[in-house]
Each structure stands twice: as C-alpha cells, then as structure tokens.
Length: 228
Image (tube, rainbow, N blue to C red; front, side, top):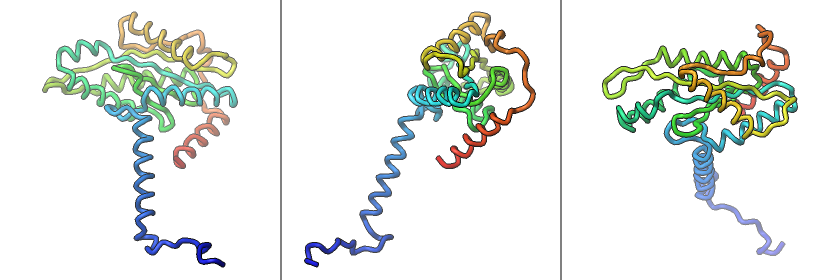
C-alpha cells in the first residue's frame, strides 16, 4: 500500500479530539436553532409556522385513521384594554401566565400554539368534538380559578373559545379548517365573550369511553414523544 493511501488518524483520543467536540457544538447549535424556528420566544409555545405544519400532519392522520382532529381557537378578552391599563410589560406577563395555564390543563399529546398577539390555538389529536369542548371548558374554568397580579393588583382575565373538529370525510384545506374555527371564536366574542362556541349539530350521542382506535392512537403519539 502506498503511504498516500494510508487512512488519516486523529492524534487525539475520542474524548480529546477537537473535531468531535466541534461536531457536538454544531449539533447543539442546530437543535437550538430548530427549537427557535418552532417556538414563540415570549411564551415558549409553538409558533404559527409550527401550527400550520402540524395541523396539516394531523389532518392527514385523520384521513388515514378516521379519528377526528380537534382544534380550539382562543382570544383573551379585552386584552387591548389590559395593555392600555397596565402597560405592555404586564401584558406580556399575562400572556406567559396564560401559556402556563394551557400547559397545565391539556393532555401531553395536545399541541398549544401562539397564533399571534393575544390569540392562541390548540391542536388536539384523535379527539371527538364533545371532548374538545370539554377541554375548552376546562381551560375557561382554569382562567376563572387563576387570578393574576398585574402592577400589584389582582385581576381575573377571561377568554373566548371557538371549537371544531376535522373529520376524515371532509375535503377542506388547513386554512379553511382554521377559518371555520375562527368563525366560532367570533361567535363567542359577539355573544358576550368568556364562553365556548361550537357547532352543536355535530354532537349527537356523547360516548363515555375511549375506543380501541383512540387508545392505539394515544399510545403511538406518546411513544413518538418519548423518541423525540
């Protein structure tokens, strides 16, 4: 073998090799940038881009499995008045506070996102409309039971909710699905705010047990979360 054909060998051990250390740093930086591209920097929730991509994925899952995808649009009530009264820094504090309420009152597999401003959205995989409505009501109650202190004053903040589900028999886009939920949110606001609106005609008999298909989906999603 010619000496030019000899493979290059690192003079350092694996633990001391500067190339390996640099690769690890690059991987960490890539992971940091990946998270930044998917998360809202203020609340730590997923951002709008992640919402759109993930909702498309979940709607495709619905078309494959037949299990519906739940979706909740949320708007904090009278938030402009709150900002005008307490200032934008306290307004940001309220947005973070609400984000914590979302995390504490959702299933592990649910996907809370900041839609923009004081609007939020939640993707609920493999869920029926009745269950999605219950989730929204749970969040509404969580707000009522969790006052916040702004400028040393304790106040309650309410929110309006529009709830919908996507079924495998439907042929609509992600944008159309969001628009439909947004129209339900508008109903909640126009009817006096601090309420949950949904299409009551879509709820017939409310099942009390989780189906085998739903159990399988929940297991697969949780297994996916452990691997990610």
